[in-house]
Image (cartoon, rainbow, N blue to C red; front, side, top):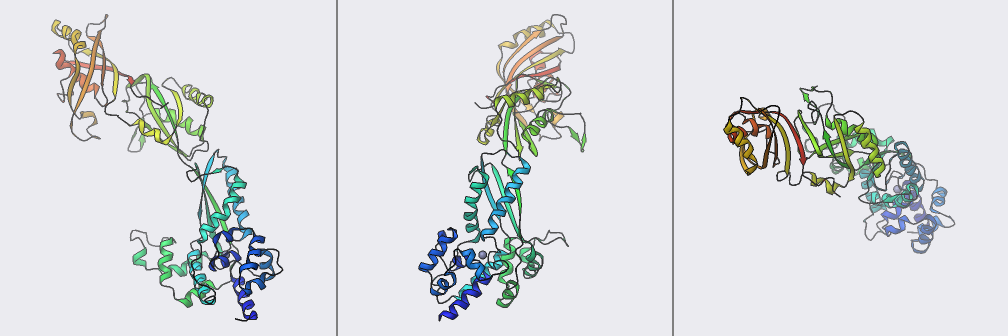
Length: 495
Ligand SMILES: [Zn+2]
């Protein structure tokens, strides 16, 4: 090839493609693609074939070289996203999004979603270079556009965001790039090439907007012939890539313990056919102020076991965990957490919390660990339905001699609508009665049981479905008036 032909070829190529894409397709070491532009120019002068030396001679930078060649529109390979003047606006999109949302974060992980059209332009540029540069291309294995874009953005982000980048970073920064001017027509044409039967979900409703997934685009490309590809891609390309930034904070977990002093408050919102039965719930009293303080979009509330609406939770309280979704704040010091506790505890006399702590994801599983083996302590106010016989009174006083009493409990009638019918074995570890000096029929029962024991059913027997029942032990008919959980023995939140 003579010098004039070489210059012509270079002019045509650099009118279509940006310098970084040319370097990629001519298989320069990809580190060179990332160097600053004057370094690239020097390198080209030393190592590149004559046609490129000629083109960049006298230019101070690749940008100047491009300018001299009057390339118009966007690159027909990367759609302009690898060009230097596109990178800073990307940073601005991200910085603007961050300043709107006031996330507090120590580490972040960027994610990039590039226009799907890049797949087709990638194919077009592959064919172009293989045809026009067969004399200089020994191999043709260009570095991936996305990898180069990521590498170019890296130092810009580090300088612009001034926080630590980390593959496990707490803030996911997603930059979605779209090339608007080609999107509709281009993708509609490509989508007509899709093999509908293979790529469409049969359940997709009719007349729905088609979605352009990578898989669909790749499938369509297999059906594009060379002239169709040329017609589609050899067009003037507006520099119209726009960025949309989405921010998402990984889950933040807050652990603590709660007490409940009401016999009319459910643990979780009580809804029957979508209609609320009681004004609030333990979950809402606790979670709403915490969600607000952390600026989260939503939350999930979980606990170690649960108590019935009419059962109080006393003693050291029940362990709970709140998973905060997309929290703006991930850390709180002890003073701030104490303030949140005061706020929750000041709402009413029904619910209080203590020991609030931000816990790690790995700590969360400890809440549910050993749930079956745990011991729980209860106190119950019980009564003899008829005046007790001396025999029953004597048996009442001897209850404290019983240890590790095995119960067989059929699923209680009151929960049969939501639990499967089964007979389960549970243990009452210790039991003790304290008689009421004012009323011979009333006594207080203190007991410690294996987690999951149905205490109410143990007392009244649930029509013979729990054996032995307290009534069996006392040879009398007994019932339960009030029940309180005195302790849930779990080390929580973890230290
Ligand atoms: Zn390019």
